[in-house]
Image (tube, rainbow, N blue to C red; front, side, top):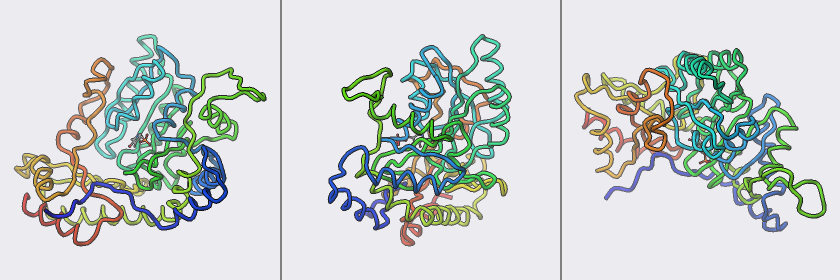
Length: 376
Ligand SMILES: *Cc1c(COP(=O)(O)O)cnc(C)c1O
């Protein structure tokens, strides 16, 4: 059996252990310490835009706290991009609120501004103004932020920007994660950099960061005993985990370059193949980290389906995966409203994510190319 080629596997930079050793030597083995401060500082420098970052246990935790801080409560409605991973939508339900799903557009595969506008107006006409809008930069591709931000501003609804897949991406030169009222980052094992598991909430004021840290550390009031006036969470990142993050920040730029090279490899590979489209930037406003390279297979033109390719890869021990199954098609969200024109459904039926690791080797690319040429 050939060795396994992964869709996206952890890629250590070499500097991580230094920070972990420091933490052990100083006995900072807790959800606070110099690595947590250092990692937040590194992220703030990288993101720019004067943001304040709170390091948390997961991207999902960051989404949950963003909703709490936007005042989302039981019975409220929250708009969410349908084409995404379930972690974008689940925290809406943690709050006892209801998700309203919005379709994608064909250029970026992210939230369609027209469908968003339609959804907001229809919800308002039904007597319920949405409390927040969760947008996603899928696979690292920035969403159409100008159009989306203008609509959000018109109706005065805060944007929660799920940039879990888009650290290092930019829209009109501005880093993804810094557009929304809050931005969400993830450092799960498969993301562009990893801390094994972890996330962060990007805030725009020191006050919001302080509040986020307070909520993520069990919401203790300032008193010698344990006193609580709010419901808190145990969502803070540990000093050990943050040490991995500091090491990974040293190589983030290299990781973005490497993923973008993998994307170029696929663009070249499919250039001669009619009926296969690689998700790519549609103009200079967009700069994707290309966390995952993804394709759309046109059945009519190629005579093949994405399943034909996925199964051929599988036989050669190469991992590939259909695109995220849209949330409005998920059994658990069957009752949720959905606005759009079935673009997300089309993407799901015909799309495939390809091995995209920043550690993908030349001989692995050759194995991938061989299967692609065999199928098409
Ligand atoms: C990974 C991911 C998350 C969740 O992040 P975790 O750190 O795994 O909790 C949220 N949204 C999207 C789009 C993701 O890809």
